[in-house]
Length: 178
Ligand code: AMP
Image (cartoon, rainbow, N blue to C red; front, side):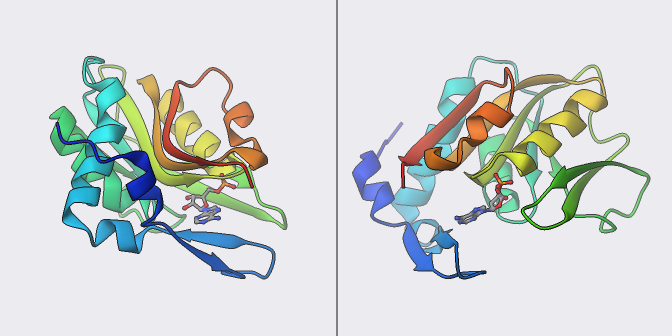
């Protein structure tokens, strides 16, 4: 496996201050996605801790989790299941609401997206406060599947999202403490 040094991956994350709201600095992963070696390396690094975990499904969180999760699924030779924003899935769905700074949001999964026979890895680009990740992992557990863990490219450690995920095996490639 070719593993670029984490510093090179980090150099391909673009900070966009004030997007989408003034108090947030957005971690833009598009420069990393555009670099063939970095893209491959990031996906392989996200999959690596779970290579011997018997993962049957990778669940990707809308929207940027959809970019990374199917690639991780290819490495792990598993299937892919989308965790979507409300009202987007065509078939019957289960919903999990979560708190935002102002108001609530929700994620949904098809009721037959995963089942008790599945071992599931949840994937997203960024974990910040952990609300989204918690909703995603709760959806998987709620369908009776085994939650193997969660892989993210970026962890904003100063927002303590990891603590919101009680007991989930969370792996991040790049961490930022401010
Ligand atoms: P949270 O629920 O606070 O952990 O937020 C995580 C979700 O929001 C993920 O799906 C991310 O894609 C997105 N997100 C939150 N903060 C950022 C950020 N600073 N840069 C990019 N995406 C973010």
